[in-house]
View 1 (cartoon, rainbow, N blue to C red):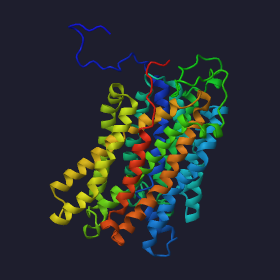
View 2 (view 1 turned 90 degrees about the vertical axis):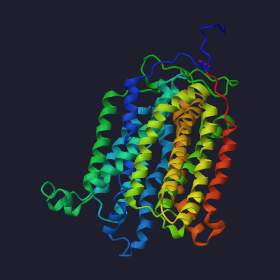
View 3 (view 1 turned 45 degrees about the vertical axis):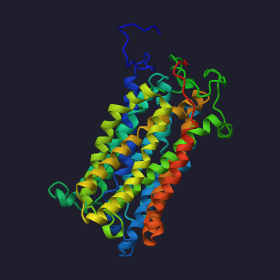
View 4 (view 1 turned 30 degrees about the horizontal axis):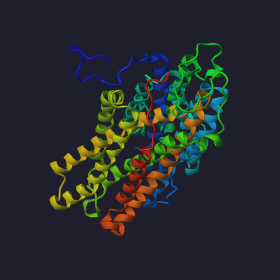
Length: 471
């Protein structure tokens, strides 16, 4: 490149002409993606009261947390068992049919959840929702197929924003619409609303999934190359492994799972994604627990309202942060540098837990220092979330061909579903165990997270450099 007086001194060394995003199709996919956090998290505000109402605890409120944890985890347990088969099937019959089945399952299961009067009916409805729902992995496959190497990161960067918005809105309508006969007796005065006090938020979630079903049926074009019926094919996805040639997608077939599991360039991104999800879900479970735990036990003793405000502020701020910085950082520094740097932000998150505990033991109250540390912790968490769009790109680029994208995303989504199913109960129990027996001063849970984080940092250093000039 020639340099003269008009050459910018801080010119982006990675600047290149980007392919415009396919806004219509991407918009449809992101709209449907919004149903995922909505359907998964709207039950959180009322699940404890619902467990008490169905009577499974026998009047012992100490058991509510156990049964509520089972209900909250079942969606991810069944999803972990079925997401890979659904994703593999999408490589053969197309992405659109799988999405339609998943949305129909979400809608029906949400209605069943609102009409459930026994614990086992609640269990069945959540299992149905998870078992029929392989949508997240399939939607990532669609994004990978409708973008190319110049705009893929830009598209994937929108996913955390969608999840942040959904995670902020779902608890609001979930808690606000529960027991409508108490809030709006003139509108919901019938006996139905007394017998089924949590049906309204379930019906809203079901209606949103049903509306998404209609949008997909009418507006989404099939993106699997072999099912596009003569339409112009999408841009090629450059493989991570530049030394290994891949067949043309027109003649390629889905690569068997066994072969993918033996391929180093495939498993490294998936391993990074799995450990990232495990560490992240650990913090997701520990942050509200630590904030709510009484000071004398080793927490901050914040009220539920204060915790809700903190988490809502984080959701909104995180969405804005990702919107403003993620794509720019990837464009300037590259995918690997952004990922390796973002995961390092877990270290200050870990450090702030014992530091806040020490500060509040000294000050005996939640003062400006504690709020400043909470701000640092949540800001670091937003930096960590920059790693998700990047790892989505690595997983997509690791696919041998487009007809294997479903299987690739199914494998990666299985790892994160397992983490979401096991992580909360594991880390909250470890937190309680650490405090009860004062292991390592009550800090054993943070040491375990630190070990997992070091493993993640090690894996991140083995990710390949992505070549931006491959076409």
